[in-house]
Amino acid sequence: EDSLLGALDSQWISAAILDVFEVEPLPKESRLWCRSDVVISPHVSGLTQRKDVPKVFLENYRLFVEGRELKYVVDWDKRY
Image (cartoon, rainbow, N blue to C red):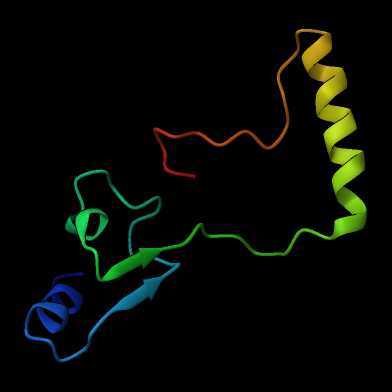
């Protein structure tokens, strides 16, 4: 992380798009979070297929109506 920040600060590179980090999830204290020249994407291993969206939505809606815990909820404290 320090090497990357150094490269950005010295303009050796102009920007970075990052998905994987030495420590995951990336700590809240990381200086990478506040950089306008850094894009942090969620660490995901697959893509959502359009055909799967209605099934997942309806399942989560059913769970919501029943007052149960939803699937695939983002934990904003963990940043994923």
